[in-house]
Length: 406
Image 1 (cartoon, one colour):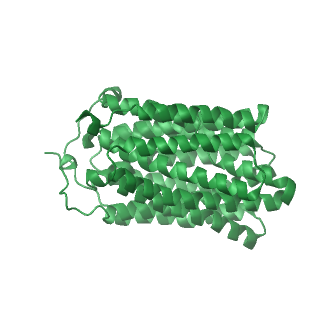
Image 2: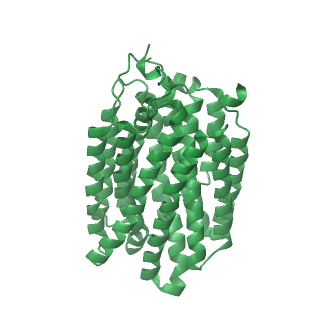
Image 3: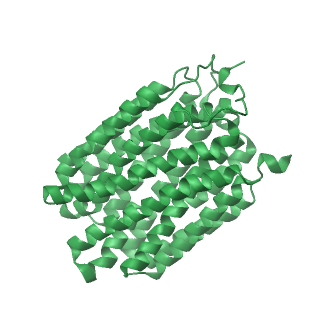
C-alpha cells in the first residue's frame, strides 16, 4: 500500500515537527512578504502609481500564481519527493521580493511581484500536501489553523518591522525592501531542516485533465463556492490604501500612511487568532462548512461597511478587525475542508486546484476593485464585492460533506 494513504493512528500527535516546521516557515516567509506589503502603496505613490496600478500589480501576480499552482498541484501528485519543490518556491519568493529595492517604475514592481508569486505558486500544493500527509484527518482543522496562526504571526511582525525600519532609515523604502531577505531566507532554511517527508511509492502518471476530472464531485462544487467568493476577495493591500486615503484629511499623508500600517497590524492580530480558533472549532462541530460559511458572511458585512465609507480611526480599527477574522476563517477552513473532501492520493491536485481558483479570484477581484474604485468610487467597488461574498456563502451552505452523506 502507498504509505501516503496509510491511516494515521488515532492517538498520533498532530503537533509534530512537520506541522511546526511548516508553521515556522510560513511565519518567516510572511514576515518577509508583509514588510514589503506594508510599505508598497506608499512606495508606489513615490513613482506616480495609484490604486489602478496597485490593482493591476496584485491581479497579474495572482493570475500568474493561479496558473502555477494548478500545474504544480498536478506535478506534486506525481513526484516522489515534494520537499525540494517547496524549498525552491520559498527561495524564489524571498529573492524576488527583495528586488523591489531596485524598482524605478511600477512596471518593475509588477515583474518582481509576479516572480515572487510564481515562487508562491510552485510551493503551495507541495507544502499543503506534506502537511496533510503527516497529520491525522481528525486534526486537519487544528493543523491547518496552526499553520495559518504562525503565518499570521509573521504578518503581525512584518508591518511592525516595516514601521521600525521606516523610522530607522528615514522612510527609505529601498532599504526596507532589502531587509526582507533576512526573514525570507530564514524561511527557506526552516522548511529544509524541519519538515519531514513521508516516503511515497510509485505515483500514477495520469494526464493533467484526467487528474482534474478525477477530483470528487463534492470538491468541484466546493470550488464553485470558493471561486464566487474569491471573485470579490480583493487583496488587502487595497485595504491599506483605503485607510490611508480615509485618514489623510485629518492626519496628513505621511501620518495616515503610518496609521494605515498600524491598522493592518491589528488586522493581522485578529487574522492569527481566528485562523486557529476556527480550525479548532471545525474539528469539534459536525460540519466544517457552517464555520466557513460564517466567515464568508462576515466578509459580506465587512464589504458593506467599507462601501458605507469610514474616516474615523476607531471605526476603521473595527473594520480591519472584522476583515482579519474573516480572512483567518476562510484560509484555515478552505484547506481543511478540501483535505476532507478529497482522498490523500489526490491532495496535490486538490490543493493546487483550490489555490489556483483562489488566485484567479484574487486576480479578478483586485483588478475589479482597483478599476471600479478609480472609475466609480469606493462605494461601487466594495458594494460589488459584498454581493459576491454573500453568493459564495449560499453556495457553501448547500455543499454536501462526507458526514452528511453518511
